[in-house]
Length: 141
Image (cartoon, rainbow, N blue to C red; front, top):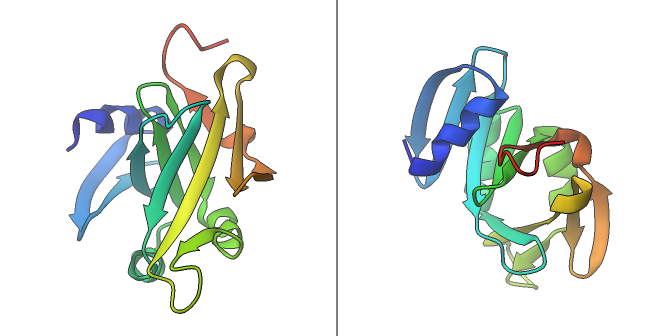
C-alpha cells in the first residue's frame, strides 16, 4: 500500500487492495469497489488527475463502482463511477484532437466552505461536495 492509502479507510473497512498496471484498487466491506488516485494542491485548492482510456475499460471489467480522488493530506472525494463517466464526456483530453490518450480530471476543493467541484477548463461542471470527506482534524466541522 501507498503511504497515503491510510486515508482510503475513511470510506469503510478495506477487505482487499490490489494494483493493475498503474492503478490502485480497493474493495471495501460496504460494497464500494474503488479506484484511488492522488494529487497535490496545484494552487488555489485545484487538484489534477489523469485517467487513460484503458483504465476506464478496467473499471467495467473489474466492476469498479466508485473512484476516490485524494487531496494531499486534506481529504478525498468518492465519486460514483456513473458520475465520473458523465464528467469524462466533457473533460479536457490529451491530445485535443484525435484518439484520447489521457483524460484530465480537475477538482477544486474550497476547504473553508467544505465544498468540492469537478470542473473543465475555467468552468465549473458539478458540485460534488456530497461525496467529500475531510480527514485533517482542523478542517472537520
